[in-house]
Image (cartoon, rainbow over all chains, first blue to last red; front, side):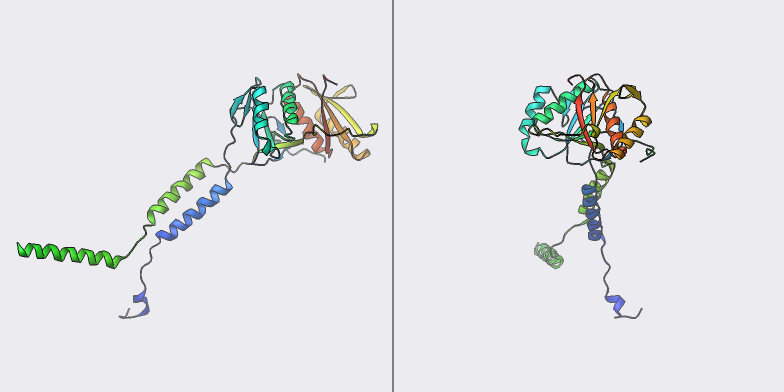
Length: 138
Length: 147
């Protein structure tokens, strides 16, 4: 390479800032696209059903096998559930995702649905595991 | 002694000039480190699995009564061992066939689900699933014990 050529004038580039840009871009993508585990409060065995994707922006109501109720991850009684929902009247349009144990008696679900209806939370999602084999017929 | 002072003065001046020549600098490698650290955290803790469920709209407290023809109404009493329809306990496929036939015969059919208090919750989810699979979109939920 002869002295004073164009290649001599080029300076070596530092790729540190480009790497930071790339990392931040990926970080923003992951922050936007990943979902975090909803506050369940207790582990339950979900029923199986023909499901569709539930919205992320839900209120979470979990009912354990023995009928304990957890609202957004915190254990509440039936009366407390009334109060909790009454305090969140501004969020009435948000769906309430009911995560209940598959072997739970319907009596508990009925009670909770009654409370939801009373407090005007009318959009309900019964959380369930998707059926593995697609049903035949229609 | 004078020589030493002179030497210190020269070194100070040289250092000052070196600093001035460099100008303000931004160290971006630490930022990259931090970003990658957070990135790995989100990759590990995040989940792409969508939550799934069956949507159901409850009637409003102030909703009025809806008048229906007798032919439009399909009543089912889910049991822990099947679906009781017109006093016969059917399995899932049998019930689904009936729902499809009723849905095809009468438009805007309404499935009325009478749930007993001691019936398991999974039977409700299954009944709603069968209704959805058979194209029956209007569903009413009642307590069997209350009537």
